[in-house]
Image 1 (cartoon, rainbow, N blue to C red):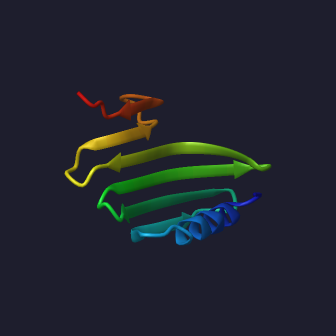
Image 2: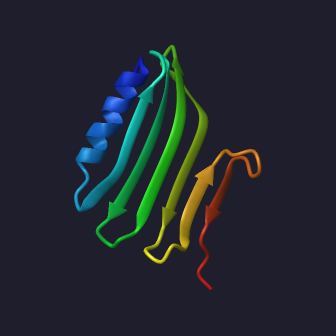
Length: 99
């Protein structure tokens, strides 16, 4: 992929191919040919929730995620995983533990 538009189109195709998923939110913002933002909220058949937020830069087919957040939770709100690069816990992967 060479542009943010190509990336966003590919993501949209992949999401539409999912079965038993409700797209609660899909927002894309094209800032330039190389830069864009994406926010997605998907509700799965078991009522679990996946939220995705990305700020992406593409140059010469190289992707750089300026910021990202992937948050997946159970229907009761307990976290299954959260992966992001926010400054207070950079590059951490938070996984729910079963006790």
